[in-house]
Length: 227
Image (cartoon, rainbow, N blue to C red; front, side, top):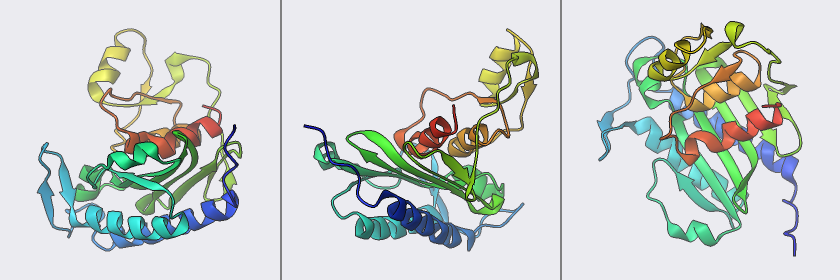
């Protein structure tokens, strides 16, 4: 038996978008363009950085999204994973600040990312980049938008003139095969995919260690934009 459709999906997307805008404002309070963040920072057990803004945004979104869809489980970069999510139909997948190092250094290339999974498949996605004034949204089957306007991927057919972003070692390896136009590093993986979705760049390279919270929202946005 098929599962029933997600209720009031457009209304839910609007509510998630507003929640991401509020979350972005929380992070922006401690963001310093072109300078070191005012947030307290430390390293997680694996050595990756985290800031008090990551934790604050994560806490805010968990409370807000749990109200919007109480039956949904939770998966976030900044929260201990709970295996209970594997038995739930709906799961929120959240990266409170994708591109923490960029945020810490004053680069604008960071984003708040939220996706909703239905039976393991993304059905809703928001990538909000406060410092770039860009908010990407999508519902499965409904196309993708940037700041409310429909977006689509580029249709460039030649690698030689393609604008490609990604980790430098991967770009260097690709350049040895065929020349292309490298793009300045985009630290946030979600923004890298979102900018492919809106045609700002033509392609992106992704390392094998990307996690669900890095990809879930942006991947749906990219697919709905034609990627």
